[in-house]
Amino acid sequence: MKKHLLPAFVLGLILIFSCENEDLEWVTIDPIQCMGNPWELAWGEEYGEDYDLWSELGAEGQMDVFETYYEDQGVVIHEIKTSFPYDAVCAACSCPRGDRIHCSVSEEDVDQMLELGFELE
Image: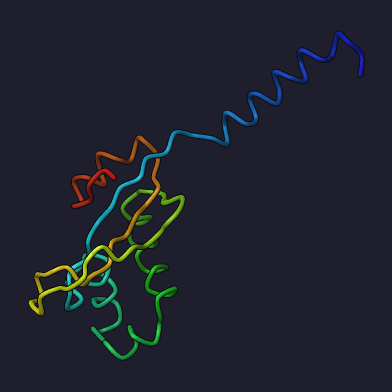
């Protein structure tokens, strides 16, 4: 490569990688039991609260519903992880079901996610 092209090449690489590496933040939510979460309620409105069908989706399909719901709210989720921080949970519908969902979102979407019930990780 000619020496006079090297600065332009390096600048091009910097621009490419800076566009791909937007600033992301992790937010979390502890879903509640009894299909009481916003993404489950929205799914239930569309599918008639068919709990057998919900179960048939499996964990991956349910996470797809979760991601689609928040995309419909205008938030792009870049990565999703789950953890299980509770040793025991109560049986009430308002209690956490035992898992925690961790979402990587753009910094610009953090305030909206906090308004939707998430917490900063």
